[in-house]
Length: 283
Image (cartoon, rainbow, N blue to C red; front, side, top):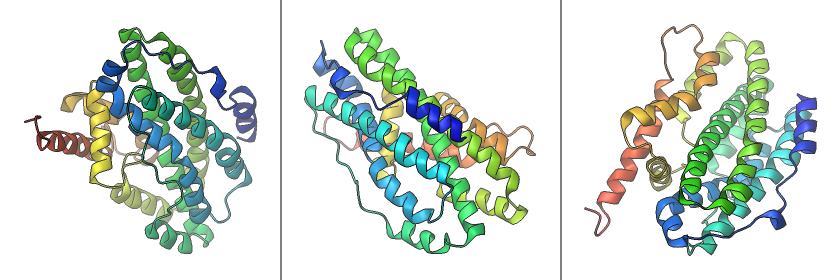
């Protein structure tokens, strides 16, 4: 794992902000079709700054390779992703992302108190890896669909100097979380595994979706990227949680996807549809 982190740092430095070409031929159409997607992605990428503060609270004594990964590789890469996407959305006439960069919730602080106990910290670490896997996998799938959309529009500068370079860095993050999760899961006791499953089921939420409005933002993103029916949403959830299913529920034959993942993404779409129906002119 240490070699993987070293390789990520060397082969995938943060994207050079000066390398980005913000040329957009159809800014109004891009804003209409994908403005909400850009805003959600920019916000979640920028909020890794707060995520690192949360990790310092939740993991008071993490393995050094974890600390090096999230502070020296993941944080600078994701921050540049957010800065680039936010600049793009501003240039096409949208307001900048409204971000929470430094407010750690009381719930996180409470969990952090118990995380000083080594067996509990292992459970928290496992939840961190699982969250990282689903977050990076959903980001990669979303960037794939966004790339298809901007290429279809003929926005080559956005495709080749923004979306493709960002997308190129996501699989390495997912690979790190997957390796770490598999290694830790083998070493957890039965009660720890039970607790991981239970806590994951009651706490799962897409990244950056801490309240109903933010969950609706996730739903808007899914709809804008073509996931317009239950079958498409279920397929997306299945791809997002494939490794999690295989790891946590290996003994449950026939389980396509953990039900809490499907339920969460479905609720996001439902909230987005409900919010749109309540807006003037969208009935």
